[in-house]
Amino acid sequence: MTAEELFEEKKYLVIAAVKQQFGSIARAGQIAEINNMDLDDLIQVGHLYLWEHCMNYDPERVDTFNAYVMKGMKWAMSDELHLKGTPFKISRRVGHEERNKMNIHSIDLHRDGETVKEFYAVSPIDVEQEAILSIEFEEMTSVLEEQEKSIILHVGEGYTTREIAVKLEMKKSTVQTRKTRAFLKMNPDYKP
Image 1 (cartoon, one colour):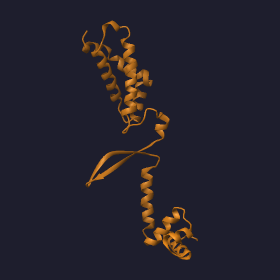
Image 2 (cartoon, helix red, strand yellow):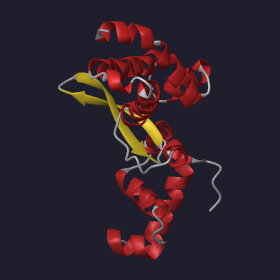
Image 3 (cartoon, one colour):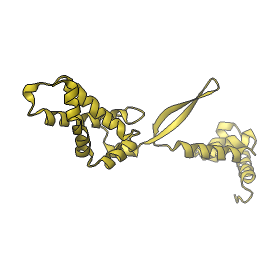
Image 4 (cartoon, helix red, strand yellow):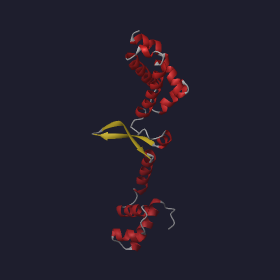
């Protein structure tokens, strides 16, 4: 029997391995989608694994061929999901619970006036929310003079009026006055 004939005869093992590994074809499709893949990608991995083993087929091991190929095929599919199913490499020691907690954000890289897509960042920070807050902060502080903005930034970082006065080489009362003026510019309803 040629490798091609054996492959055609044993093709059904790929679907059987998918069903065994993931419970059903529909569930396998969902898992693949979660991992940025298509169900066809998993099936292709199974076909490649089967083809490799059909090429190295030993007729003396006909009784164990199906079980041997099924076991290896399921591992190959799981490896494909884990290693290539995300846009970046994650250690195999990271469990799926921990992996699901990671925030994965696409970041567009701007280089020489062109936008290069598909850069990713793993971070507990919500990049989109941080960008929105940064824009809102810039809009809010745009009404302030540089010195007022500096005082507000120091207040936001937790410095006391006295520490700000020392750092900016001003009197404490001057810092207090400018801080109050800055807050009033940003929010006319501010009550010191």
